[in-house]
Length: 353
Image (cartoon, rainbow, N blue to C red; front, side, top):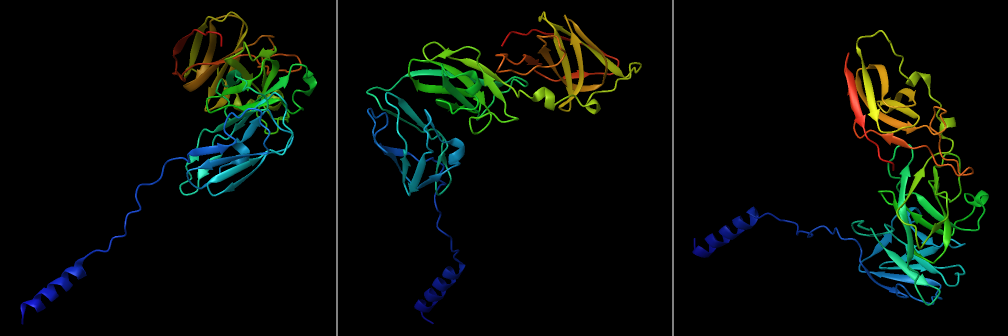
């Protein structure tokens, strides 16, 4: 047998042992679409166009458009849009106001087709006058009951002359939406005074169950900033009367219970509320500090203090028609632990929000 035959056998053997590997597709695309250009250009003055085109670096699609997109000031007719591969076109089927700066907010409205990467921030401006308005109003939405930020919630401005009875049934002039931290901003305003409101509903009109917030006085785009708006459900008290089954039945002779003494710098009528497992456990009413509650079952609790301004021993929500803000509630910054046959003293210094 010659050497050529042995080489042939060796080559066939090596080929039979080789693994077939699928070529790698490369690293996963984690980048959001990039806006390359718009027509007309961003911040166009004396705007008269009926459509705006956005050109991206890759194929795109919409992402929860109805949840995220809005234009301020609002238009009478709904805006329509079309996406064709890398190009999005927005159609303005409305008559624009003179001497007005418009802001289109497309935050989180666009994502790429391949991996679904979302474009987090995108804003487009144009003006029907020879300048872009630059004044702004900003602030934060806070739940009056929990003091937690109110995210993804509408805030709107009405003209100064609009009567109060129409504020929650009329389409607003300017709109903004709060972010995850409850922060909102109205950019590119002109020099005017406004009435400001917030609403958890989707259609700018109050419906039963919505939480509302407002500032009592007119606000100015030249002076007012860092506003705090406390939101509450005007019907909360009527819909949430205390269920006796959720309130603790206390055995005052039990030695297995503990006591709590809260010392506070507040000098007013106070409602002390204890929560256990996120449910109302006990309430007590005081006119001065310290606030002592005896015979509490051993366990872990959350504590809040409510300033009872009218001394009616219930928390009062806001009342827009009376220009009355919700009563303030303060929450202790950590759970407290009640031990059997033990007195717990809590020192609580509160600064006005």
